[in-house]
Length: 241
View 1 (cartoon, rainbow, N blue to C red):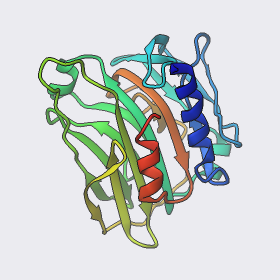
View 2 (view 1 turned 90 degrees about the vertical axis):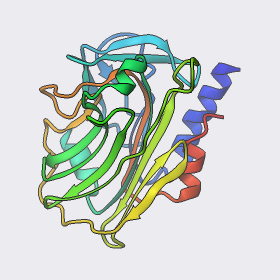
View 3 (view 1 turned 180 degrees about the vertical axis):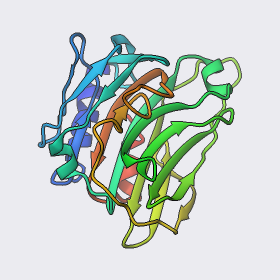
View 4 (view 1 turned 45 degrees about the vertical axis):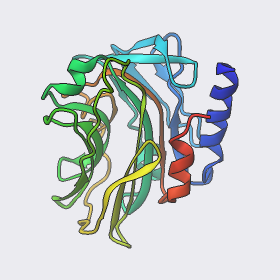
Protein backbone atom coordinates (compact mmCIF):
# COMPACT_ATOMS: atom_id res chain seq x y z
CA UNK A 1 0.00 0.00 0.00
CA UNK A 2 2.79 2.42 0.86
CA UNK A 3 4.41 1.97 -2.55
CA UNK A 4 1.06 2.50 -4.26
CA UNK A 5 0.54 5.72 -2.36
CA UNK A 6 4.03 6.87 -3.30
CA UNK A 7 3.47 6.27 -6.99
CA UNK A 8 0.11 7.95 -6.83
CA UNK A 9 1.58 11.02 -5.14
CA UNK A 10 4.43 11.33 -7.64
CA UNK A 11 1.95 11.01 -10.47
CA UNK A 12 -0.30 13.55 -8.78
CA UNK A 13 2.48 16.13 -8.63
CA UNK A 14 3.45 15.55 -12.25
CA UNK A 15 -0.17 15.88 -13.41
CA UNK A 16 -0.60 19.34 -11.84
CA UNK A 17 0.20 21.86 -14.59
CA UNK A 18 2.97 19.67 -16.08
CA UNK A 19 3.72 22.34 -18.69
CA UNK A 20 4.60 24.74 -15.84
CA UNK A 21 6.34 22.28 -13.50
CA UNK A 22 9.96 23.41 -13.69
CA UNK A 23 11.47 21.21 -10.97
CA UNK A 24 10.28 18.27 -8.91
CA UNK A 25 12.48 16.47 -6.38
CA UNK A 26 10.77 13.46 -4.71
CA UNK A 27 14.00 12.98 -2.70
CA UNK A 28 13.82 9.20 -2.57
CA UNK A 29 17.43 8.58 -3.63
CA UNK A 30 19.26 5.90 -1.68
CA UNK A 31 22.90 6.68 -2.51
CA UNK A 32 25.22 9.16 -4.16
CA UNK A 33 24.95 12.96 -4.34
CA UNK A 34 22.86 13.42 -7.49
CA UNK A 35 19.31 14.59 -6.78
CA UNK A 36 16.96 13.90 -9.66
CA UNK A 37 14.45 16.36 -11.08
CA UNK A 38 11.33 14.43 -12.15
CA UNK A 39 9.77 17.30 -14.09
CA UNK A 40 10.17 17.59 -17.85
CA UNK A 41 12.95 20.16 -17.37
CA UNK A 42 15.70 17.99 -15.81
CA UNK A 43 16.93 20.71 -13.43
CA UNK A 44 18.85 18.27 -11.25
CA UNK A 45 20.45 19.08 -7.89
CA UNK A 46 23.49 18.06 -5.87
CA UNK A 47 23.40 17.00 -2.21
CA UNK A 48 26.08 17.87 0.34
CA UNK A 49 26.23 16.00 3.67
CA UNK A 50 22.61 14.86 3.30
CA UNK A 51 21.84 11.48 4.86
CA UNK A 52 19.91 9.78 2.08
CA UNK A 53 17.27 7.13 2.81
CA UNK A 54 17.56 7.84 6.54
CA UNK A 55 13.89 7.20 7.30
CA UNK A 56 10.53 6.68 5.65
CA UNK A 57 8.62 9.61 4.19
CA UNK A 58 4.87 10.24 4.21
CA UNK A 59 4.73 8.31 0.92
CA UNK A 60 6.29 5.16 2.38
CA UNK A 61 9.52 5.67 0.41
CA UNK A 62 12.99 6.68 1.64
CA UNK A 63 13.40 10.19 3.03
CA UNK A 64 16.67 12.12 3.43
CA UNK A 65 17.68 13.69 6.73
CA UNK A 66 19.32 17.09 7.00
CA UNK A 67 21.65 17.45 9.98
CA UNK A 68 20.97 21.12 10.76
CA UNK A 69 24.60 22.13 10.23
CA UNK A 70 26.26 20.91 7.05
CA UNK A 71 23.44 19.45 4.96
CA UNK A 72 21.87 21.08 1.93
CA UNK A 73 20.92 20.45 -1.68
CA UNK A 74 22.00 22.94 -4.33
CA UNK A 75 19.38 23.06 -7.09
CA UNK A 76 20.79 26.04 -9.00
CA UNK A 77 21.45 25.79 -12.71
CA UNK A 78 21.30 28.25 -15.56
CA UNK A 79 18.39 26.20 -16.89
CA UNK A 80 16.47 26.61 -13.62
CA UNK A 81 17.13 30.35 -13.78
CA UNK A 82 15.67 30.40 -17.31
CA UNK A 83 12.61 28.40 -16.22
CA UNK A 84 11.97 30.30 -12.98
CA UNK A 85 9.44 33.14 -12.94
CA UNK A 86 9.81 35.81 -10.29
CA UNK A 87 6.44 37.29 -11.29
CA UNK A 88 4.24 34.22 -10.95
CA UNK A 89 5.01 30.86 -9.41
CA UNK A 90 4.35 28.22 -6.78
CA UNK A 91 6.26 25.81 -4.58
CA UNK A 92 5.25 22.79 -2.52
CA UNK A 93 7.19 20.73 0.05
CA UNK A 94 6.69 18.13 2.80
CA UNK A 95 8.79 18.50 5.97
CA UNK A 96 9.23 16.89 9.36
CA UNK A 97 11.37 18.19 12.21
CA UNK A 98 13.88 15.89 13.89
CA UNK A 99 12.25 16.24 17.31
CA UNK A 100 10.14 18.59 19.39
CA UNK A 101 13.21 20.62 20.37
CA UNK A 102 13.73 21.57 16.72
CA UNK A 103 10.12 22.72 16.57
CA UNK A 104 10.07 24.64 19.82
CA UNK A 105 13.50 26.31 19.96
CA UNK A 106 14.43 29.65 18.39
CA UNK A 107 16.98 28.59 15.80
CA UNK A 108 16.26 29.60 12.21
CA UNK A 109 15.93 26.58 9.89
CA UNK A 110 15.76 26.93 6.11
CA UNK A 111 13.59 24.59 4.03
CA UNK A 112 13.59 26.06 0.51
CA UNK A 113 15.17 29.18 -1.01
CA UNK A 114 15.01 30.59 -4.53
CA UNK A 115 16.72 33.94 -4.73
CA UNK A 116 18.82 36.49 -6.57
CA UNK A 117 19.95 38.10 -3.31
CA UNK A 118 18.47 38.74 0.13
CA UNK A 119 16.28 41.54 -1.29
CA UNK A 120 14.83 39.32 -4.04
CA UNK A 121 13.98 35.84 -2.83
CA UNK A 122 11.23 33.33 -2.19
CA UNK A 123 11.74 31.13 0.85
CA UNK A 124 10.10 28.72 3.27
CA UNK A 125 11.65 28.39 6.72
CA UNK A 126 11.16 27.74 10.40
CA UNK A 127 11.71 31.09 12.09
CA UNK A 128 13.48 32.22 15.26
CA UNK A 129 10.08 32.19 16.99
CA UNK A 130 9.16 28.86 18.55
CA UNK A 131 6.67 26.70 16.64
CA UNK A 132 6.52 29.21 13.79
CA UNK A 133 7.24 28.86 10.08
CA UNK A 134 7.57 31.68 7.54
CA UNK A 135 6.54 31.59 3.90
CA UNK A 136 7.79 34.71 2.15
CA UNK A 137 8.29 36.60 -1.11
CA UNK A 138 10.73 39.49 -1.12
CA UNK A 139 10.84 41.66 -4.24
CA UNK A 140 13.01 44.78 -4.47
CA UNK A 141 13.44 44.72 -0.70
CA UNK A 142 9.69 44.62 0.00
CA UNK A 143 8.78 41.64 2.18
CA UNK A 144 5.44 39.88 2.10
CA UNK A 145 5.10 36.87 4.36
CA UNK A 146 2.78 34.63 6.32
CA UNK A 147 3.92 32.96 9.55
CA UNK A 148 1.83 29.86 10.33
CA UNK A 149 2.29 28.15 13.69
CA UNK A 150 2.52 24.43 14.29
CA UNK A 151 2.52 22.66 17.65
CA UNK A 152 3.28 19.11 18.71
CA UNK A 153 0.07 17.30 19.61
CA UNK A 154 0.58 16.00 23.14
CA UNK A 155 2.92 13.04 23.35
CA UNK A 156 2.31 11.88 19.81
CA UNK A 157 5.06 11.71 17.23
CA UNK A 158 5.51 14.91 15.23
CA UNK A 159 3.90 14.34 11.83
CA UNK A 160 4.93 15.34 8.35
CA UNK A 161 3.63 18.77 7.36
CA UNK A 162 2.89 20.07 3.88
CA UNK A 163 3.81 23.70 3.15
CA UNK A 164 3.00 25.59 -0.02
CA UNK A 165 3.30 29.06 -1.50
CA UNK A 166 1.99 30.88 -4.57
CA UNK A 167 2.95 34.33 -5.81
CA UNK A 168 1.56 36.56 -8.55
CA UNK A 169 3.07 40.02 -8.82
CA UNK A 170 0.67 41.14 -11.56
CA UNK A 171 -2.34 40.39 -9.37
CA UNK A 172 -0.40 41.45 -6.24
CA UNK A 173 -0.98 38.22 -4.32
CA UNK A 174 1.06 35.99 -2.05
CA UNK A 175 -0.68 32.97 -0.52
CA UNK A 176 0.66 30.45 1.98
CA UNK A 177 -0.69 26.95 2.55
CA UNK A 178 -0.40 24.41 5.35
CA UNK A 179 -1.57 20.86 4.70
CA UNK A 180 -3.34 22.02 1.57
CA UNK A 181 -5.35 24.84 3.16
CA UNK A 182 -4.57 28.55 2.90
CA UNK A 183 -2.97 29.90 6.05
CA UNK A 184 -3.44 33.54 7.05
CA UNK A 185 -4.62 36.25 4.68
CA UNK A 186 -3.57 36.89 1.10
CA UNK A 187 -0.67 39.35 1.10
CA UNK A 188 -1.06 42.20 -1.37
CA UNK A 189 1.98 44.47 -1.45
CA UNK A 190 4.46 42.53 -3.58
CA UNK A 191 7.54 44.43 -4.67
CA UNK A 192 9.33 44.33 -8.00
CA UNK A 193 11.96 41.59 -8.23
CA UNK A 194 15.39 42.47 -9.59
CA UNK A 195 18.11 40.07 -10.71
CA UNK A 196 18.67 36.52 -11.91
CA UNK A 197 18.78 33.55 -9.56
CA UNK A 198 22.09 33.27 -7.72
CA UNK A 199 24.09 30.05 -7.67
CA UNK A 200 24.35 30.28 -3.87
CA UNK A 201 20.67 30.97 -3.15
CA UNK A 202 18.76 28.07 -4.72
CA UNK A 203 18.75 25.48 -1.97
CA UNK A 204 16.79 22.80 -0.19
CA UNK A 205 17.47 22.33 3.52
CA UNK A 206 19.29 25.63 4.13
CA UNK A 207 18.93 29.28 3.13
CA UNK A 208 22.13 29.28 1.06
CA UNK A 209 25.08 27.12 0.08
CA UNK A 210 27.32 28.29 2.96
CA UNK A 211 25.18 26.58 4.39
CA UNK A 212 23.40 28.83 6.89
CA UNK A 213 20.31 28.00 8.96
CA UNK A 214 20.25 24.33 8.08
CA UNK A 215 17.11 22.24 8.44
CA UNK A 216 17.15 19.60 11.16
CA UNK A 217 14.91 16.77 10.09
CA UNK A 218 13.52 15.35 6.86
CA UNK A 219 12.27 16.89 3.59
CA UNK A 220 10.35 15.29 0.72
CA UNK A 221 8.59 16.16 -2.54
CA UNK A 222 9.92 19.64 -3.33
CA UNK A 223 8.12 20.95 -6.43
CA UNK A 224 8.33 24.32 -8.19
CA UNK A 225 6.05 25.76 -10.89
CA UNK A 226 6.21 28.96 -12.95
CA UNK A 227 2.47 29.49 -12.63
CA UNK A 228 0.19 30.28 -9.70
CA UNK A 229 -1.51 27.09 -8.53
CA UNK A 230 -5.14 27.21 -7.48
CA UNK A 231 -6.49 26.46 -4.01
CA UNK A 232 -7.76 23.14 -5.36
CA UNK A 233 -4.27 22.30 -6.65
CA UNK A 234 -2.77 22.97 -3.22
CA UNK A 235 -5.50 20.93 -1.53
CA UNK A 236 -4.52 17.97 -3.71
CA UNK A 237 -0.81 18.48 -2.96
CA UNK A 238 -1.52 18.67 0.77
CA UNK A 239 -2.97 15.14 0.82
CA UNK A 240 -0.63 12.19 0.34
CA UNK A 241 -3.31 9.77 -0.90
